[in-house]
Length: 171
Image (cartoon, rainbow, N blue to C red; front, side, top):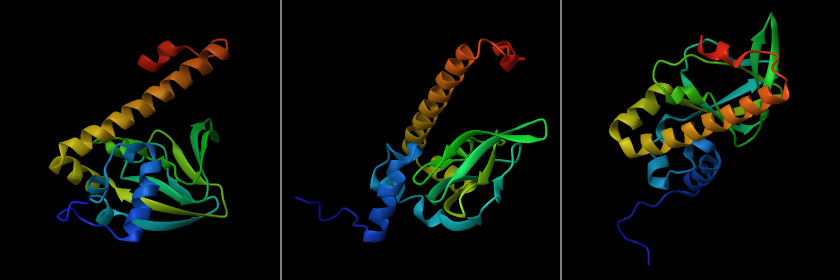
């Protein structure tokens, strides 16, 4: 039996919760927790070859792809080298969950257009400050994401026969 005092959400909100839950950083949150982010989210359209953000920019927002494709690239001697291609339902700009972070990659639209949901850093931090449980859940997801990336990096390094020195990471 449903609790008569529990909050009910519109069909549109429910669809947004389902969409968010599919993204890594929201997967642990309950509807009530995700609802805290809804007022701060806004939609933005981008066109092919438009840059969402550049490497070394301040991390001012988390992005979720509603439609389209984004390439995450790193700058290698005047060229952009794609490190990851992401599509609908995926999030990027994850280090906006951290305080005072700078972008580690450049995000470029590769589809004809892309519809993105933008969640500003300041809004994320406001939710985190007022609800440490939400912060803990999202930081756990972020830690798992970074752990998976480290595993891929080290596997790639082993398979590349040491064309670079991992020690350089810590210098």
